[in-house]
Length: 238
Image 1 (cartoon, one colour):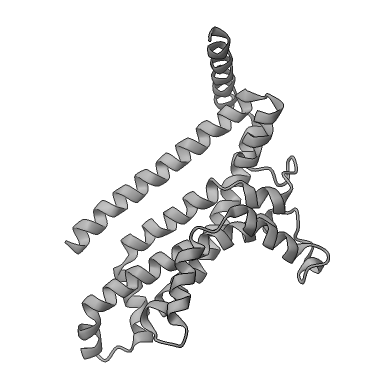
Image 2: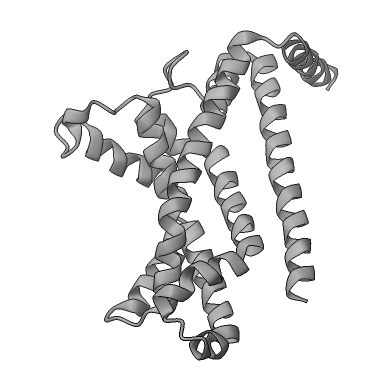
């Protein structure tokens, strides 16, 4: 028992030293993690907001299947996404000529695939609820469904920001997909989650714990922001 406590204590002490000394290698990993996740969330959000709103407002054959698919894809297994993107970007794949495999760009694509259905599904639900509430008023003003999309997205901005934060939380904590398509290359595609897995397996618990502390802090901030925005939304919508 004392040995276990000593191991944890040494790992925690080492983690604090690395964080307080602003270890360059550690913060390169953190910076790349944020760069990849923020890029993926930005791209996914730009695609998911109009997609979710369009599915909410327009009626077309197979719409029910699209709604079911979006909801189901929210729980996509990361390793399956990683495999699909790997096959897409491999030399024998349709996008192999682009040479994106084992690059940060491949990691962005994988995380984007994971985040997009989350934001799209939550956007669809938000816009659908707002349309039921305001469609008579909007139609009386001569607004078509297509023209109502920007208005409804803006009115639901607090809920949608929470959806985007949920997507960012999924991306920042993901390990399977980025490990497959990024290769966990030191100094190039190594991010926090893959570093934690690698350093733990190597017995470098100080580095793993330092990155774990940063990742937990990041997730805590995301949850805090989501809670705060949720409170603002409740006040806004009464």
